[in-house]
Length: 140
Image (cartoon, one colour):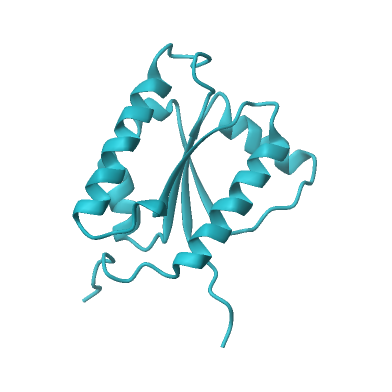
């Protein structure tokens, strides 16, 4: 039997975290290939329903990553995202899903190594939790 490889969806801010992920690739820094990236213009645009839908459609974990606080290109988008993130954790706990399945990080465009470290850490944490089975949509 093979080791569980988690399926992680990452919503990355176009201006910082996505550029940091790009730097990770251009510098050939290795990180687990468990992440499917969705680029958003700002983490403030990540609707909590996007997170629930990702989990429902097979993600074992979700990462939301954007500009450091105070450095948002849209001024306060990352503060809005942080507030929504806290509400999402409470919602997940309420519906019986371990809130540790979602994570938020701040990665700037110049932090390619940090992006790889975050992905590695998230992957290891989700591996410890195991696959998410209780919330996935049943395919008919």
